[in-house]
Image (cartoon, rainbow, N blue to C red; front, top):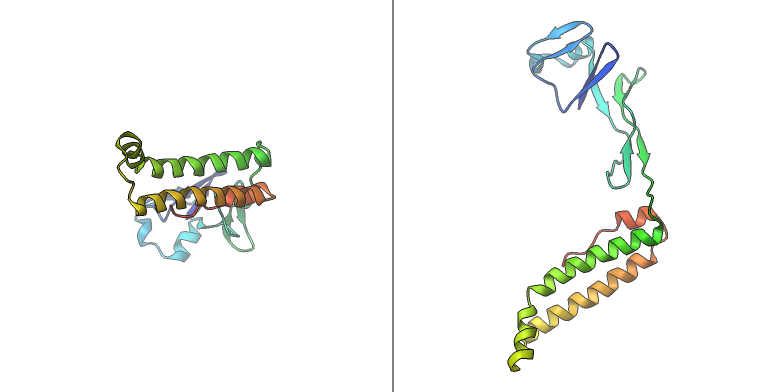
Length: 159
């Protein structure tokens, strides 16, 4: 990312734009400018120090670090209004809904068994049993977490 301060308003770009305005004027064909030319025009890199994860961080306001000659955005830890228990409950509910979707794909075997006693293939029974076991395991793992950040960062296994 790049940024330029134009009369107190910092404009951030995903990369060097074709043209931009800075206190030194309007700069056309900026893509062809060297790094030194860009910096002389007031355009510098944007740096986010640390390992940014949007699940647990917000980005602070952008500012210019004159020592490093870069624009910076600091990481700010998110806070959650929900309690630890509420976050756990939401996370577990989400995983159970994913498991339910997978179980729904084979529910017709179970209905067929109930309707006319046609056997459910053993691989289907195994898959369904594994899904229920995995659901219980995930629920136990989530319930064992002790910090909100851990719950938010918990990644579900592939199902």
